[in-house]
Image (cartoon, rainbow, N blue to C red; front, side, top):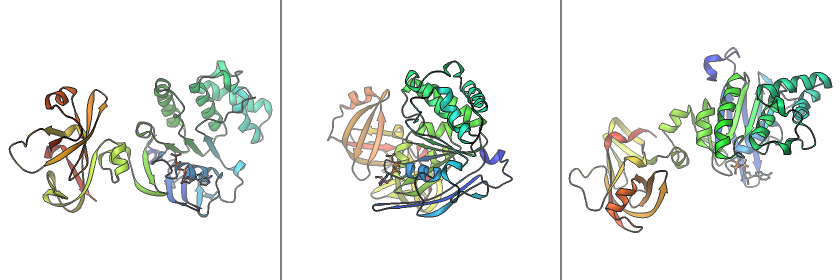
Length: 355
Ligand SMILES: Nc1ncnc2c1ncn2[C@@H]1O[C@H](COP(=O)(O)OP(=O)(O)OP(=O)(O)O)[C@@H](O)[C@H]1O
C-alpha cells in the first residue's frame, strides 16, 4: 500500500489535481497528488471542504479553476460517466430495487459489458468481498457492513484508476467498523490505482492511509505520513485529533518560551517553534512543587471529564492545556472545577520542532 515504493506509474503520479471551487461564502483551493497504489486521507473539521474536494474529483461538483490529471490525462473534458473513477458514498447509495449482484454489475454494464459478462464480473467481486452468498439480496436485506462491502465491490468492479471513499466507515457501529476497517485495508492494499479517502476519524486515517492531507477552511494546512503528522501537529485541530497539547513559542537553545511559561526541552533549536506534549505528561499539584520554575505553571481547572480509564482535566491560565490523570489522583487532590492548581510537564516528554 505504500505507494511511492511500488510506483508502477513510472514515477508519474497517477493523480495530480488542483481543485478550486468557489461558493458565495466558501472557497476551496487544494492541490493533491497521489501515486499508483497510494491511499491519501483527507482530514479536516466540519465544513472544511473535504466532501467538496471529493465531489470535485468525481466530477459531481464543477471546478471554478484548476485541473485534474489522471495517468497524465486531463479529466476536465471527460464526461463524468466516462471517468475511470469509482466512488463509495457515505450512505453507499445502493439501488434499492436491484440485488447486490445487479448493483455491482451496474458499472460494468454502463461500460458496455454484456449482461452476462457484467454479472460474471460482479459475482467475482462479491466473492472477493466475501458476499457471494448474498448476491440475490436487496440492499435493505443487508447489514450495514455488508452494504458497505457491496458499495466497495460496485466501485471497484469498473476497474477504476481512482477510488474515492467518502467516510466509508461512518455509518457502521463500532464493532462492525473494526472488522470492515481491516477488510478495507486489505482491499486497498490490492488496489493498484490511487485512493482518496475522506474521514473524520483519525484512526481510520492512520490505519488506512499512506499520506494525510489536512484541510481547514478550504486550504491544506498540513500533510505528510500519518506518523509524522501525529508526532508534529501544526494546527490546533490536528493536535486535538492526535491528542496532544500544542503551542507556538520562541526557542533559544533548549528553552522554549510560550507567553509567560518557559519550557525546558531536549532539542537544541532556535527561532519560532511548535512545542507539543501529551495530556498524560502533565502532572497536577495542589501546592507549588519544589525545584525548577521551568515547565511549571499555575492554572485553573476549567472542567473534568472521564477519558477512557483516566480522567481528563482541562486547564485554563497562561496556556490552555489538557491533563490526563488517574481517578485516584483526582480524589487525592480533591479536584473541582474552578480550583487553582500547579501543572508541570517533564522536559523529556515534550517535543519541539520548527514552526
Ligand atoms: N451544495 C452546496 N451549496 C453551497 N454550499 C455548500 C454546498 N455543499 C457544501 N457547501 C458549503 O461548502 C463548505 C464546505 O463543505 P464540505 O461539505 O465540503 O465540508 P466537509 O469538510 O466535507 O464537511 P463535513 O465534514 O461536515 O462533511 C461549507 O461551508 C458548506 O456549508
